[in-house]
Length: 134
Image (tube, rainbow, N blue to C red; front, top):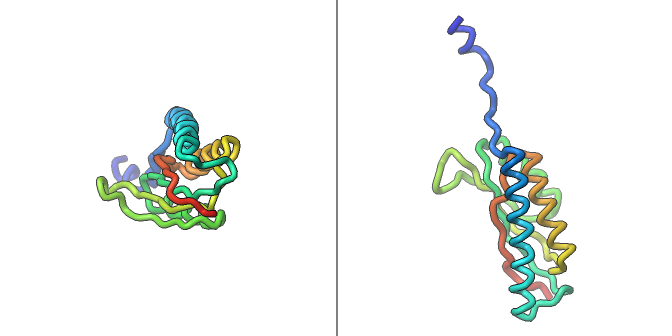
């Protein structure tokens, strides 16, 4: 019987649980609000469009490649690489096109990125606003 277990296809381990997804989404929405407050303090208005760098993590090359393909459809720059801190993980990163810094727009973007990551079993880990496009 041991020999039969050897031939069974290994199950791919889930990287992002529903609980982790929900918790992370809440964190990302709070981060968006905090970022907008900081931007307003710096004189950035709602109509100003900024680019955002983003980062996802996952546990297989296949998942990283599939997420990368989906992000390319959004006309964002994107690439994947092995994580420097853990070679068993993969980082998917890049930057967006310019996005207006309105509460509704940024919240929608954060929600979409969280959902996109979860759909591909990747964790939307972090993002930062990087440049002004006027």
